[in-house]
Length: 82
Image 1 (spheres, rainbow, N blue to C red):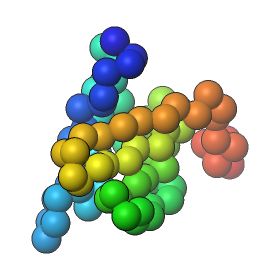
Image 2 (image 1 turned 180 degrees about the vertical axis):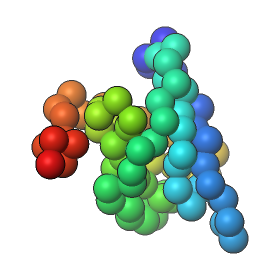
Image 3 (image 1 turned 45 degrees about the vertical axis):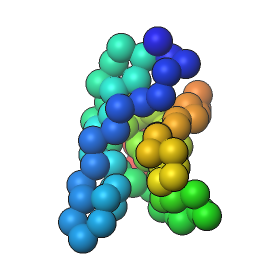
Image 4 (image 1 turned 30 degrees about the vertical axis):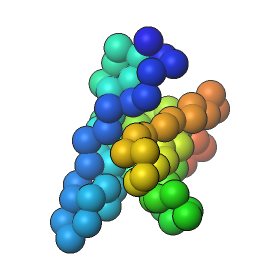
């Protein structure tokens, strides 16, 4: 179900959610190939990621709600062709 929050697997060194490595969403598993951008909002960390299949997503973690959210970018990244 694509309306459900994703289940995100993260590398966590000194803190939780240092960077996502994979996530399950909509009945599929996505491997994170590369973190393209990382930021910190008042709610928690956010990541723009490129998956192994070339799809782009934004993953954000709300620390108070202890919940991930996901926004799918329907485009593909030109970097995969360079």
